[in-house]
Image 1: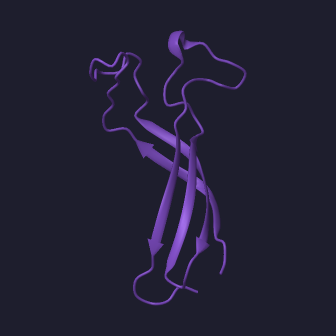
Image 2: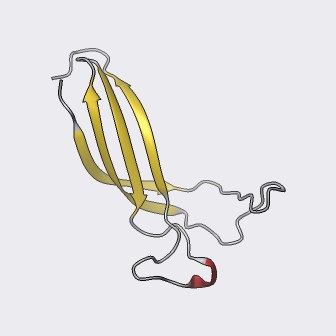
Image 3: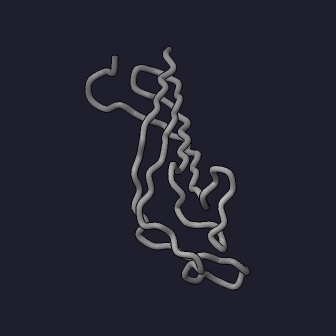
Length: 98
């Protein structure tokens, strides 16, 4: 078994955003989101077999996706950031992975 790891960059595009600030239903965001995002990625996995790998992936915005309320900033925290934790099962079809 081997443990694959990875680092990289990703780009994202926001097609639409809604917020539920009070629990009364979704509305357009009061503070607009940026349409594009640049994020750093890190992943680690485990090869269960020659064809099946499980992975955990973490992503965090390198630039804010929108400003803080009122536009304030804090020591390197320039706004609201997006982060994501995901779990994946990968299956390799066709030839065997080396």
